[in-house]
Image 1 (cartoon, one colour):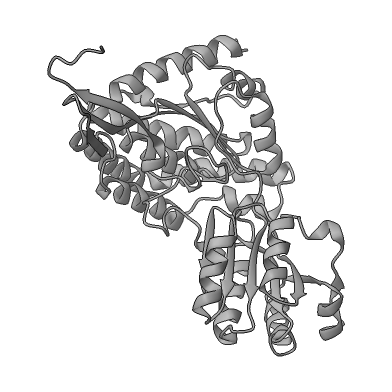
Image 2: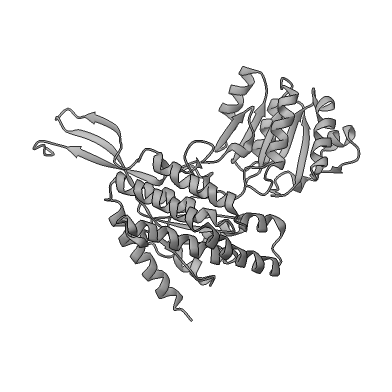
Length: 419
């Protein structure tokens, strides 16, 4: 049996040392490593799938639901997406060393702000083994070490992916410990990792609300997170209803188990009778359970009535709330009262309303005439993301390379002293 406290302390210390070395490595070397990481996953895909099958069998045996199993599963297509993400991150500009602002003081001193790596990033996550590759890619490119602790349900998948990625780094001269996986499923390992304030500079949890709250409550290091994704789409009286139907269907049905899937549809009373019957019919044909307010039920009587506790719920499933609202003000008030500041969208052809919605809805991503499912680092052109933040300090929204850097002041002088 492992000495968990000592194991985590040693792993964090070694990862921090590797992170310090990585911070000094050139963009060329980092990019070569990312390409080798991609090639390695591509060549070893069959081995990854074999290890993933072990996790899937154990998951089925332990009663994981279909949504969790879907997140856990890997096939050639998903591995191909991981490979593509690694290559795209390699092609992105390196933020490290970028001068973001420069000014000259009256005494001739030149002050600038430069982007620098944060240090060692801890990632605590559930189910999705692709997070291992996404996190490693973004951290290597941004000059950060990463220490990963995935869920017990994905242990075999995570071990092989991390081992392959770490080995590829070493072949290009980057310390293998820059990608460190905690390979024990002991729950105490998570708590111990959260106590490593001497080594870990930032923790990013990815998973359900329960996991994230546990991390926040126990961490001695800064945490960037979002608790849940209660995402809304508002169909305005000036909406193109064909466009609205396709966007709303995608936002709910395409992948309902994600944090950026729509949980509540808000519809202006002026278009509700024309829009809701066709929208609800299409949703139900796709297997979606619909729960509506009293006005919605009056229009389509064969659906369930939504209750107060439903409006703030993140289903992560094919269940959708629908509310008929009198105008955009009521829609925005509902979003403010029940939303999670994650992703919210308006469907409208009114320029004025669209821009008012963008200004007044306080979420990490606000959309006009587009699906909330697009709140994603890859879709935003970040190459990949390490998570979506709804916190307000340092980073908000999908976290890509830039969000994984901090800044430092650099000063060029010529003998100046303070008088």
